[in-house]
Length: 385
Image (tube, rainbow, N blue to C red; front, side):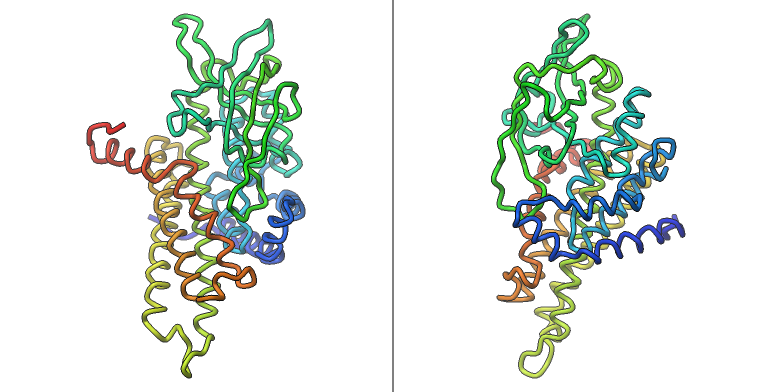
C-alpha cells in the first residue's frame, strides 16, 4: 500500500494551499458576515483548474478523480476557506453528469462546472423524508414531451448562487406504477420554482434554502440519462459527497489545530508557554491523532472510488465521513478551549468554525445513520430502522 502522493498530487496540494492562504480565513469570515459569496476565490480556483480536477479532460477538466478533488477541498479548508459548493457542484453534480448524463448534458454542463463559470446546486433533502430518501415526496410527471415537478426541498446549499439545481424527484414506473428516483437539471429561474432562506447559526458564505416546486415545467432533456438512471446516478454522487465533506472537515480541523498550536507554543503564563502544560498539549495531541486517522480513511475511500470499487467505496466513504466529522468537532472545540477567552473572538479565527464542524455530524448523513449502516452492513446486525 502506497501512502505517498504522486508528484502531480503533491504539486496540486502545494498550489491549492498557496491559493487558500493568499485569501485566508479573514477573507472567508468577512464574506460570510457580509452575506456575500466568495466570488473571487471561486473564480481563481476555477481559472487555475482546481474546481475541475475530477472532470474528464474532454470537457475542460483535469481528468483526475475524487482523490484530487479531495485534496482541493482539504487544502482550501486547511487555509481557513472551506468552500461548501465544492462538495455540491464539482463533487456531486459533475460526477453524476459525467457518469450518467447524456452526451448533450456533458457538453452543456461539465465545461462550466470545471472552470467555475457555472454552479449547480443539489436538492435531495425534504422536510418530511429526512434521512429516508425512499420516501421523497417530490414527484415528476409527464406532460407531453415535458416534465412537471412538484414538491418541497430543504437545506439546499447555495441555490442563490447557482444557475441550475439538480433535483431528486420520483417518477412512476410505467409497468408497475411504483415510484422510483429520477434526477432533473432545473434552471433556478424556472417558473414555479421559489425559495425561502433558512437562517442558520453557522458562519458560512453559502446560504441554506427551502425550495418550493409548483408544477415546474422542464423539457425532456432535463432528465439526467433516462428513467432507469436515477438510483445508480444518485449513489454515484452521494459517495463523492461524503468523501469531499470528510476532506473539508479534515482540512478545517488542521486549520484549527495549527492556530491553536501556534498560540499555545508562544503564549506565556507564569513564565512558560501554556503548551508546556500537559493539560493543554495532550488534548491538542489527541485531536491531532484523530485527524490523521480520519485522513487515512479519506484517502482509502477516495482511492476505492477512483478505482471503480463502488461497494467498498460506499463503506469507506461512510467511515471517512464519520471519522472526520468527529475529529473536526473535537479539534475545533479543543482549539477554542486551548485559547481560552481568545478562542471565542473573531480575531483568532477558531470559534467561527464551531457551527460548521458541528453540522458535519448531521449532514450530509447523520452519525447515527452511519452507525446504523456499519452495524447492518459491516457487522451483520439486524436492520434497526
